[in-house]
Length: 566
Image (cartoon, rainbow, N blue to C red; front, top):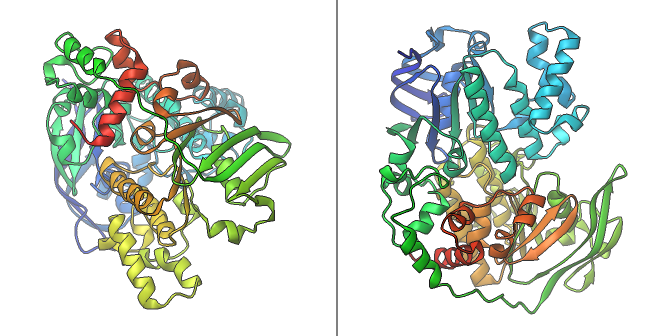
């Protein structure tokens, strides 16, 4: 019989800086060798629960505790964080908060150094761990200069060789490209199987986590556990819709086709679920397909012609060309390190091309200042910590308006408007330091929206965002797009975002633009998917399983999703 490893009994926690509790009456037992997904929307309390398990609460985040939390038989409130670190290895959501080494190699080696592992043995283990996550060529790199996805890989490598009972992953997919996200889930599963660990995954990207089997799903909302169930039972319930969690794409497609899915169908895996009852309806659904017509836009807003750029003689953009028209919604996609963020910085004028030409509204971009570009293009960076400078949320959102000499009344009105849109108004007087990584993302988006630019360029806007909150933000951006002819560029790994909100996709791989086309065509091209390190969508897999054309099914699905038909 499996022994209890984590036990919460009548547990309540309130942060010192808040008047209301974040966790309420938690009763939960997790047993040894279980693999558990802790699921919930942003702000549901799932990361706070994780902090109670690994000792960051109460040792780093002070507050009032009621009830009991025991980890490996240790009452956490009476233990040191060092004692708990012997039991729990953690990969944090915010990778920057976890780095301690001056290089990638040093950071991966940190726990080995603490264990006095011999240097010769340590070097081998560090290389092995880095190779597993694809970072073996970056051992001398400075962690803070890596992309978001590369930082997450380094953090993951750092816990591979830790001898702990519990591995806790706090939103491990937040900054990873789709293919690396898939690899990360496989790696976590391999660690679980080979080392007999107890694995806790804190995530809201349900479909990605279910790429490998999960024993239990703990669903949280407003600091309470609202469900403790199996993945199959969860997927056929109404809990996902009720609590703002995105259901897998293939389940949405089945519903569009009029299929009623049961837990007995095994819906947690598109490759193994029983489709025999649904084939006729799925084929009839595809037979109704009418191909989408390419949208036509008249005014060229941005023209990029044969642009190249190098960092320290390493070419990261190679002869890139594309046009952006006024009023378009475009996804710029590709694997980590493909050149997407570099292209974004170039469009904003932070860096300038070594070769080639960029024209903005038919004007030579090289003759424009950063201030002039900034008045036209609002840039929301991938890492919110690099944008936040004020202590209080409302002050952060209003900072740029204040620098533009707007009156206090104008600032208050504009700040209140965007905070409502971004679901942050109730937290307007909170310290920025008291909110989650995902909530910080929303603060930075709100600060840019307050400026009302012509073009909004968002670098990974959905990283760390649950379905409900990012739908609210993107629906607002869609409304702005429709009423003001706003141009929106999304630099993203999120294929759901590309499917639901964009007109076309510009695909990068190894510094080159390898495809510029409608999203459904990109996602139906296996060669492009492989080169860009994307992940085949479950819609592609569903079409292949019933022997139909993925392009037709994906296009049909996108059309119906945008029309809101089910």
